[in-house]
Image 1: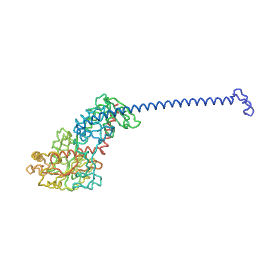
Image 2 (image 1 turned 60 degrees about the vertical axis):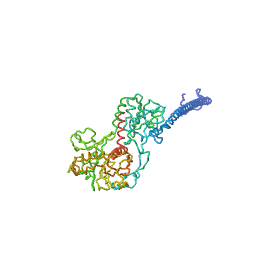
Image 3 (image 1 turned 135 degrees about the vertical axis):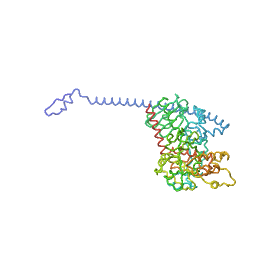
Image 4 (image 1 turned 30 degrees about the vertical axis):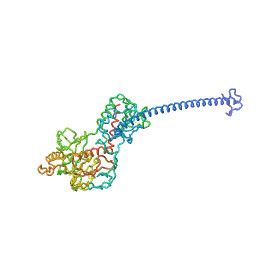
Length: 562
């Protein structure tokens, strides 16, 4: 619309009112009403569509709930039918079932109405695998596969019952075990059939049940270092979970998305599903094989009265009883050309000494770092060569000469030494007095009174062989064979105490009286105590942190290959 100019540059109202193209007020109101009605109609259509959508979703949710209830009812009926069969079997062979499975056992990832395997009844790898193979993973009532919580005794912090250890270490939160009063007693936590704790962690689960199988799928969260391997061949799916913090076996129930089960993966995680491709399959097999711990190295020192750390590591004149103990638990070997586990000792040029002590125990290899057999020199005041080996051992066997009292493990400055198994010879009279036994009436004492003791003739035969070997050692005081007492170890006794650094829980076999005859059963006790001590310590810092870093790197290595 053109507006004619005037002399005052003002708009003429009359001209505007007379403009033929000017829209009337009625027309504007009519258009506004039409627009309002159209918007109202559109809004009503949207609301109606939303109501229909909600109704459809509610109906769908209702149908899904009904279907889920139907599945649960069917599963419950199957479980009840299965359990009724189990109940009948229990009536026939109750000891067998109750021995293997226990309702008190708690799985790390439990499933409702499933009874878990009692690890205390585990006899061997073959025993466990036979139970797994005979279990129906289509209708699951008992579960020998899943990882369960490991339970141990607790420290009681009872007063120390002997003078072997300096009780001032309690102020630094060290733990001391001197007899049966040092730890709690729970029957269900003891009497394990396997002498080595958590032995099943060494069993080849992945190789046996996952390796080279097409039904296995892998779910990987690279960012959070989580890898879940699942065998989907059965309704109840066997799975192995690997994270930086844990390695856990679990079972995933039917119709369950593994990525959403039990918050294994964090919310919003980027999860990639893989088939069982060689890049993952072969690497997991290698990881399992390398993770098996069957080689141990333990330090051994001899302590004389009034010695500090440097003096302890400088001991070269060693009493006969020290080597009697060593020959009881291990075999003296020549290092040059030695082909078995060396524990870091040189086997080519004798740079770490000429001899050492080595043994095998339940398929585990053990090398002892015996301080008097490691090289040293007069100029090496701190005995660094000996400390270099023993200072990197988690467990140290400490032999106290007679007369040593109030041994203080804080003398050892190594951050690696966490467990000290302390042995001190005592007289037969002192041993019997401690046990309240009449010396005239009793002629037998065993490390494990439940087991049958060795015959005296057998022990004397072993003792003669032991002492003949000892006689050839130049480190023994009075090492001349003619001066050795060949009466044997049958009447030799010792007292044992165990000290651990803070936070480490007690581990079996637990001390009873703390007094033992130095026989073959005592060897079993000592080997189990040292091996289980190291396995327990590995669950605590700083060793646990190292293990977590290793697992994180392993998962990252797999992710990098994909």
